[in-house]
Image (cartoon, rainbow, N blue to C red; front, side):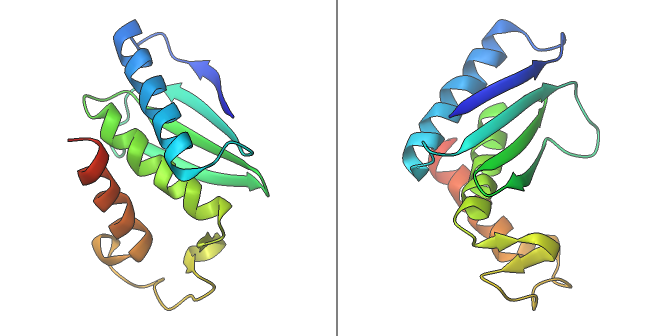
Amino acid sequence: MIWITKIHNSWNPNKIASAKRMLYKMEHYFGLHNTVIEVKLKKANKDFFGLTEKCNKNHVLIRLYKSEEIESTVVHEMTHAKQFIKKELGYQLQWHGSRKWENCPYSEQPWEVEAVEMEEVFAK
């Protein structure tokens, strides 16, 4: 279930609609219907476009920061949501239970590689 709990006033209706469409598309694709996916649409951030964190077993929080790349950001962050819920990605950079990736460069971390690959498939 997608639950948008906050929308910053800098988001225009077209960006909100675009984000919602992609959120629902990815929820369906990943089969996350029994998961609470809380989404906050935040003002732009110079350091990143999105952040995803696991709140508990079936609840993730996604923060989407206003940007021109909102569809690819939604795909990227929904991939992380799927990774958390399906226990592929854990706390402290565990990937399938292993911490061997914790000192790996960002672009080589397997959870990021998958998220970027999903962007290329869905947000063309």
